[in-house]
Length: 317
Figure (tube, helix red, strand yellow):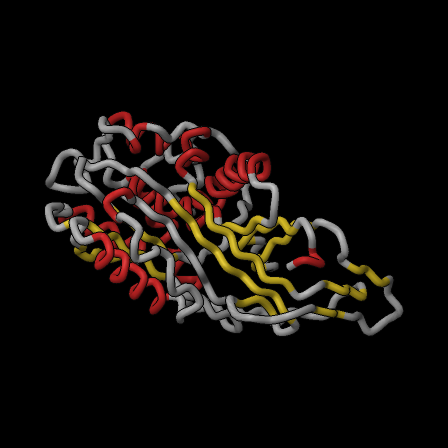
């Protein structure tokens, strides 16, 4: 099988505003594509977190929408059983272009939010022997602001260096070594990675909150997790990506997401920090976070999730 490496760097916010979780979620989705994206991603978050929480014992942080977005990108290039499995697991039973349009609108909106610094970038790395169809590349550019680069899978160290250089640039050097130079890139077909930098200066709280400064870094091999939710065919030799490439025999062998987030007094970002204390102006109760907790970084007004995290030991991070 020909090798494909896909790295996506994406920052998006999500939580659905709708209680309609039908197979198509369709009645309003054509008119409101963003709502379709929020709804399908909320369900996807539930699916993925249930499995992650079961098998990962320590701290967890991930971006369900980042993963969902890149799988949606891949689904636009899939056919047959490969497409069917992706559509079912991602709740893409409606026209996939509706989801693509939802992401396009969402990305456009996020990049204009004041007071929050968001970095959005996608890239598909393909081997020299692969030729992407113009129709697929056009959709990637229009819907996801994405582009492609050529690598030589027969020179894995050089390919890893190229990917790491691009990734370091996109993440402002917060992550500089996604792939070890000795990693055989030929064993990696698809990689989902994400590190945003977000600075949010929130309003006062109604409690005196004592939250330790913390930094969480997670890297997941998502292939076994995706298999558990029904996405199998894209990893097999039977995978059909004829809507993506002129070449036959393309498959996915690995899906990885890496996230680093740090929370301090000034908000949340991917840099070094140490504890956080927020106090209300009145005599509110004091709440000290000294036990495991769930952390959601979101846009409050619109209820959109940026990250979902589980901190098992706040005193150790």
